[in-house]
Image 1 (tube, rainbow, N blue to C red):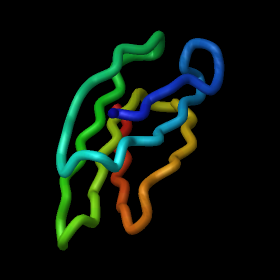
Image 2 (cartoon, rainbow, N blue to C red):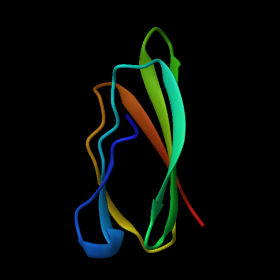
Image 3 (tube, helix red, strand yellow):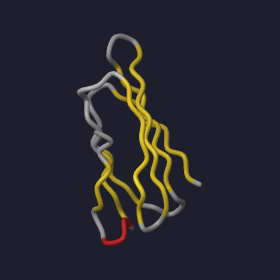
Image 4 (spheres, one colour):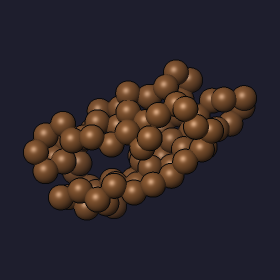
Amino acid sequence: VLGIRPLEAGYEKLLFAPSDAFDSFEGVVPTAKGLVAVKCKSIDGGRKNFTLVLPKNTKFEADLPENSNIEVIEY
């Protein structure tokens, strides 16, 4: 559901491809670099807002559902 998968060893780079099946969800994935948190909230009749919180200097690719927004927060 959260859509966090490693693209490089040790999560040096990750893929963020969250599910579109739920209106809202949140969760945390432990990685070798630290915790990665995801929050999803539906607005405006199905449009999704995603928040991705990840350790500094973590590279990522995003594959988001259509009409979605993403906010990225590094710690």
